[in-house]
Length: 414
Length: 146
Image 1 (cartoon, each protein chain N blue to C red):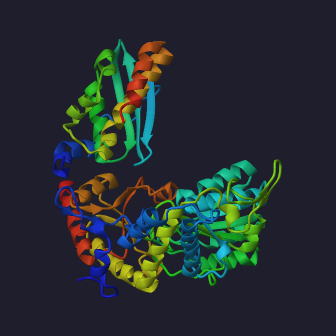
Image 2: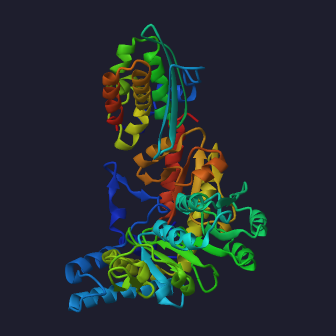
Image 3: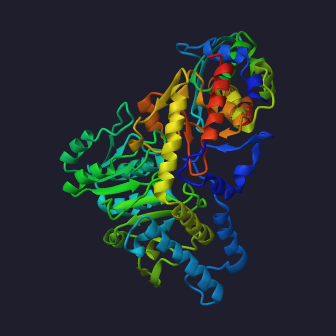
């Protein structure tokens, strides 16, 4: 009953963790991929190979280990450039994750370009990481933060953007390419077209989209683009900020320190070239190298296949879930408009109780506000349960999950 | 402990039909807290008269464990001596709920009500009774719950 698009058996063999049991004898079913994905053996080996065989700091030393480490680190930058299809490798800045990338833009570009009464536009379905940095900036500068609302289908109400843009005060529109709660795929082209007409800068939070959809930055005409390695088979602690060269050149550094300088004198410093200007201090070398193995892995499967597999799983799951009485599913119905993230509530069972029950059957799902309390308020719920899929998940696993939900219903007598 | 042991009839009953749910006007103690990880919210109102709990009510949102725990705690302390209430421990809460060996993720749900109660008593002791020694002791207990 596995989906036909990818060789699921050989993929699952690459993920040793999927063989483990939880709660003594229950086969692990990992449906918390929107939080972080599992890592294939190739990624784990790339990291340990670095520590075992060529651990060294990068960029400065001239010895052989340093040369090998620098080459591996910089190769990852080339792979990122290819993965998201950008021309200039120096536009790829390694950071700790999406959160740090957004904070970098808010701190550096935001402080230089946002002033009193300016407007920053975000959306109601953002992760806290694409709300809080802008609140902080708006407070500091006396600027305003405005929200594009979410309709009952879980899609953005893009007409609202026109109203904000018409004020002529909008400096930045920032949105996630895929909602981490509803799975909604944002109509990015439409937003970007509207912004371009008014000369407004655009930041895309791609934490949920890059791991699951083919992304082409030469087609997506944004200014800033941020994502994390750990949601796409890579290690934690690595993320990418991409921005147009002229923007990065105009921006002040975020952190000062080693590696980001050209010359340091007692009272004056000149900055290093891009991207090093934004990579102060010893970076997360091992995990950046591991990230390359993650991108290699995804490219071997092909991002089109990844998407196809997830569509098949999501369709199957939505079909089974919608047959459960008293279930409330959130997010769009059309597969073209959603990724493999399903949020729901079952009767009056609180998501934490539900997650506890299905965990007992080996199924790891997420429960809570998913770092999206603004959206929870909009949906008028305290929390939801969330199942999210990736390349190694199967329809058989979904069957176990559905059975477990029915057991929860029995326990709660609904 | 297994879900079948946790979600017994009595827990579900208190979750769906919480006793002492509501607010008190001008209470002697009004305390709220939330569990930032799960978003459980709880507010407790208490009136003290003649060194006894004259009335207690709570409002809140959250999982079955947190809400049943709060409701059962209000029943436990209603009419009781202030001294008795001050001495309540987490074991008393587990006994009261009939839940033992909850996993680390869910212990917080069960103990949120006691945490709110203890912080409420702390404010009452320090501000109204000016008993800073007892107040500090109970604050320490509250912060050490989880």
